[in-house]
Amino acid sequence: MPTKTKRRGKLRWRGVVKISGKIVASKWFGSGREEKDAAVLWEAEQKKILKEEQTQQIQTPTDCLTVIGWANEYLTFAQARYAKKTYQEKRDGFKRFIKAVNVEDPGMIKPAVAMDFLSDQYKKRSGYSANKERKNLAAAWEWGRKYIEEFPQSINPFRAVDKFPEIRQPRYVPPIEDFDKIFSVAQGQDRVMLLACLHLAARRGELFKLQWSDVANGQICLTTLKTRTGSPKRAWLPMTQELAEAMEWWRLNRPYKTDHVFVMLANPTPGEPYKNRQHFMKTICKKAGVKHFGFHAIRHMSASYLYQIGKPLSLIQRILRHDSPGTTERYLKSLGFKADDIGQAVEELSRRKKEERNQPEERTGKIIPFPKEKTQRAAIS
Image (tube, rainbow, N blue to C red; front, side):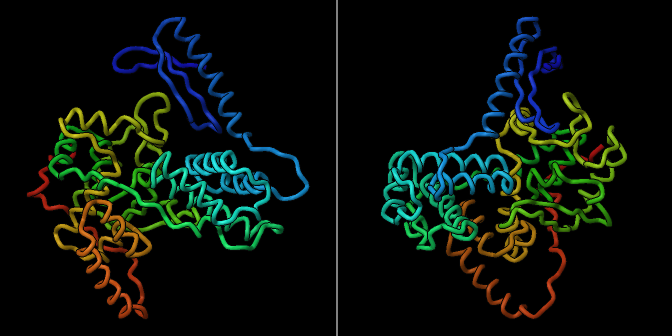
């Protein structure tokens, strides 16, 4: 049922749809009786749509393996393994492929068939979209070859197609002065979260999952699901003195004594951990009078700053928690750094790795605190 909640100083009806206790959709309405009825109808429609999405499959009864059967088996696996957004991306890619290619038997999908489909995606959409379809369908083919008994063991037709050219603009990296401006207008928990994001180069989801048991002995343990297998990966990172003081202040002054470090402080579910904070960065950037940037742009800024002051790629890799220097190289390229400079750093790292191959790996890297004289911030109070 809709709830009446204050938003921007006014009481309004809010429609909310939950699955297993988690909010998956919400919408604001006015404050009158008619608006409440509209919210009720909206909730019913959204629940119906979500139910259809959960049970939606491309169905064709058959005794032998078909492209649709392969798609359904792989999508069942993907729905259980990957995030909802990733699953939907794979499902929609299969829909486009099945609609465009009139083939029932997976054994009939040859490189020429894959090339025709992907070329069409390149022309109609973009090189990035075509390459994304190529990656997802190639992964589904490898999965089918490994887990479906009657699946063809021939060459992967999607990997046989060369990648398409992509035109990508460098990701926006806000100047550190803009971070200082939003930090100066933030208060309480928001200041602590922003500082943690900057000093740890943390992803938004890592901070939302952070619990007080992950904060101990001057270190913070961040957990991510961005791994090849989707399994959680934990990494302990040392805190700067500034961040340690901020975390301790928040631990003592937080209004809800819950396990999670960062929680919602207002309706609809105060005390519960965040899921997205959809409008927070946009609102605070506008308040500070700077160009809008998101949480992940702060991670970009941390990596960019460390690279610009000459820190080695190996250190940046450890702070960003990448499994390989190649990932860090691609990350820095996406921020607009020259390939020659990054390539030289990777070569140096490669030589160092050979020398250290038989040496025990250190548990953590060292976070370089941002100089106080460059990032003037008032004490958290």
